[in-house]
Length: 147
Ligand code: BTN
Image (cartoon, rainbow, N blue to C red; front, top):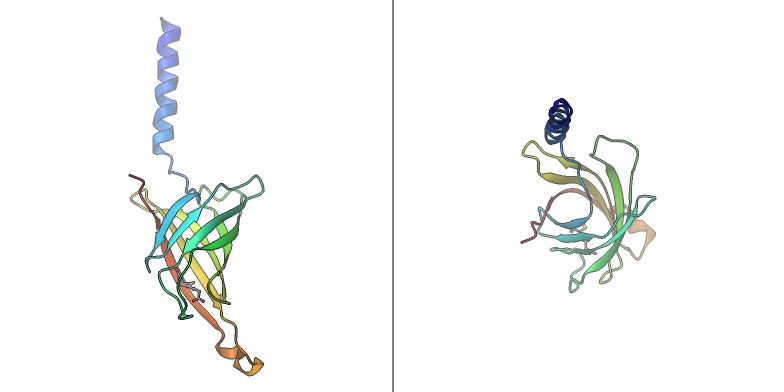
């Protein structure tokens, strides 16, 4: 009887401690950003590598938007469940490329959010135009809730 009580006590303490600890932020899944762009991140491999697809809501190219592949890397050193990462989107419908870097956070409401910065490199015909070929910005992604 004493053993059962002890076991139940330890179990409830363990469960209580678990629910108190902040959630971990996971990169895999479907995300939407503040521009309305959609991103899917597939499984992260043992070395932190991942792939996915990106459907941008906007373009600087004037071309018809198409879903494009992304390749990324997750930093796996202990960052208290809020890891940093980077990824590249190789646009299939323009001759540009975008690199994103950011961190996967759990906010005060317990919701996952990706805070990112990006560089969009466009192709220019002349080296004289290099100065205007790179745009910079931020995007905030939230998880698309599966229904
Ligand atoms: C292009 O216009 O050549 C390719 C599409 C670029 C879309 C950019 S990448 C940064 C920003 N965040 C988005 O979700 N879309 C734009």
